[in-house]
Length: 476
Image (cartoon, rainbow, N blue to C red):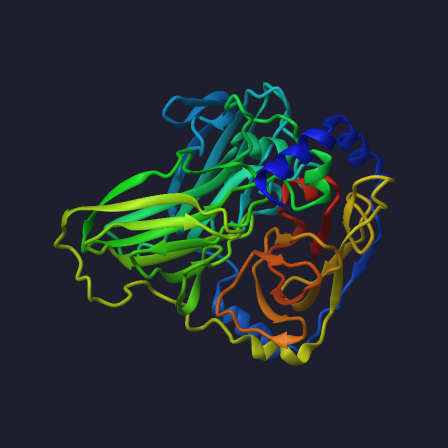
């Protein structure tokens, strides 16, 4: 469907009130609980994951304190184009929280919005009570109230934070930001850039379309915008010395858009996915970033410009341009990759003989004329069955998309490895916290259950999650 067709359909059938009623109508209380027993025979698989990333981190004793105020504001996305948004500290994205591995992070959130809100620390392994999911592990923060988040990130990498209450509206209005955890033992780059990629659905007068949870968006692939920004700006141009070594940390903060960045003028070397270092360098060109995904690439700035465009569905939105301004002396353009990698990350073949412990069916759960609900195994949240697993165990899941829509599935509090697609062994060479499942596709993953608590598992297309596509994983 073209952009004009999508906008026309949205205006005709998108009714916020109807969508809200349908969303609430499907929730009649919590479902039952199903437990997966710990398989004590999986010692090799547990050891493989244990070598890949730690269960805990040694706190450095340093505390980094931040204050965030969530409030309405305005954003200049281009010359002469101001948009009314909701923001943290008056900016979209919110302030970059950059800390070192081992630091304790304290964030005081003051809610000055007309709605309740919360913050989820996407990809950061935090204590369960700090995960920010209202109704699961936190009460929503009412207007005029505040909340204090405190955690010590266990992994270095690129992560982000965003509202987890009425996300289809609040994230779309601009409530998100980045959190970068730096390992001081990693190389220092001449330029360490964070690009938060988002799209906005604007009306003809340049204002934000406030028809959130439109029926068309719920029943299709979510809300796709008609304007793409990086760090709140359309197609920024960044001056970089030729010869300088650059690390770009890309975050897809869009409600629903899948982003496939294409670099012209340089070959981007992939070094990390969803914050976690890969086993070895990989091709970052056109890497698909579903909503919630992150990709870290590095390269040496050439003598000519570097252009980056978003080309997942052929629309060709410009993301950014890097322009050489003069020759730098800090990096050799012929040098190899400086980034560290994680050779201890196991190959997915080690999990091939485990079978599938649990299968999630991803589907539209109500007839088109009877409602608009998405769910797991025919159930919508909060009437889904909670799956219980033992902390420290390795489990395998199949995510089977029985629908005609895209579903990026995000596991809170956990990392996993994709081991197969449609029954064929896959070895991506990196971990994930979010994976895109195409229509009719079955994706197999292996997961080591870490951090006790009740964790959300949901589609990261915000409109699908609002329409019930969330379930719970309990680690005991």
